[in-house]
Each structure stands twice: as structure tokens, then as C-alpha cells.
Amino acid sequence: MTRHTDYIINLSLIEILMERIEKYLKKHNTMTIATVGKKGISAAAVFYAETKKCDYLVFVSSSKSEHIANSLVEKRCAVTIQNDGLDWEIIKGLQIKGNVELADENDWNIYFEKFPYIKDNKTLSKSLEKVDLYKFTFSWARLIDNSKGFGNRFEINY
Image (cartoon, rainbow, N blue to C red; front, side):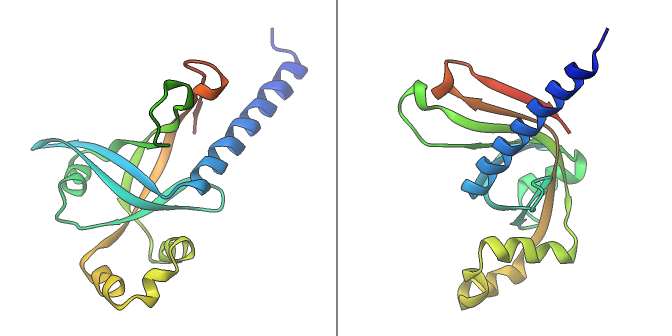
């Protein structure tokens, strides 16, 4: 039997976890996206920008890249975002599952808010003509933080 207080406690834990995920996403800017398609598996590091609610990420990539070609075959993919480190006690990062699709034109604002210098740099600005903006929407996330103990992790379904 679930009590009302159990629901409130669980809701509070979810809010705390979501807040920790949001902080982590805002603190970083590079993710590795892993996809699978007709030619096999692919992984690529890309810069990302998060929405204010952190309910999806946007990133730029060439439509000709293997990971984007894969996402046309299979939208489901996985992403990792992590700190660098040489000691297992400081391993911290996110593992996320979700879907990739073309982003809306309005989502460029999200990207430029995080990377405003791109618009001002002629070379970078010109390179945007060769790429598209994509959207990675979460379905599941795991936050790992070994500083709180080996294997310390929290998971959430979206």
C-alpha cells in the first residue's frame, strides 16, 4: 500500500535528481553520441546546448555524418557526458538514452545562447551553412557520482 507521504518523498527525490542532472548539463558542453545503423555502430563527440528545462539537448552535425545517417534508420541512441579523471573515486557523469531528430528553427536560439561566439566568428559562422541542428530528447538518464561512493548512481525515466 502506497501512502501519501511515500508519494511526496518519491516526488522530492525525483526533483532533487532532476536538479542534479540540470546542474551537470549546464556545467558541461560536450557529449558523445552513440548510434547504430545499416553500416554498424558509430560514436561522435559533439558540442551541445541544453534547454532551460533540460528536457532535450541540441547539437550541430553534418547530415552526411555516420551518426546522423544511423539516426535516420534508428532514432534511439545513447549519450554520455563525463568529467575527465584518472581516479575511480572522481568518476562522475551522465548516461542518457533517447531519440535524435531534426530540431526546429527556433532551437538555434538555444544553441547560440550557449555558444554566442559562433555568430561573431566568420569561419565558424560560415561552417554552420554545412550543418543542421539536431535535437536529442531524453527517455532515460543515469547520473553517476563515485565521489559519493563506488557505483553511486541514480536513474530516472522521462
